Length: 229
Image (cartoon, rainbow, N blue to C red; front, top):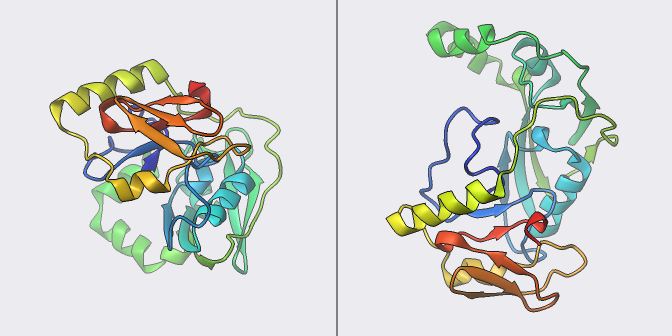
């Protein structure tokens, strides 16, 4: 599992469950070797990206195929997630991103509450799932059409590195994280696109054998962010 905001649930409804090995990384700078995975699953991730084109390119670089699901533009209008900067449409197997107008998520919690409180609403929603979600199975390359996001006026989670490192170290001491095995560690690379060196693990650090950058690995969880340089 890859996530950047492991101690900030602002853009999630629940806290992360550390039941699988975790790597802290940015989806736009994935710290994996080219073609590391046979299949990648990104469910309700890409709509959070500041640069969907870059994130999609990273998905395509590290995996041979995959599945991506994002909320439709209609879902954004009716439900509204203030931390999503995009309305997403679909053209064939290409996901088309358009900047969401400021204030387009002003619907509050009404539709979300109705979904959670009413079985009939959930059944109706499920019967028309394709209206609310775009689901793409891709092979070779995930195609997206997205402009450069000129403004960042939407709400965003905030990466607090000090809090992240402290929380992961505490979870490591408590034995509540699943360690990466040697097979997964061998797939990891330096997140710097200009380097992509192999990482050497020792104590609570991962050192790139290319550029020499030392990345923290508190509790055995690698924090592979270029912000840690």
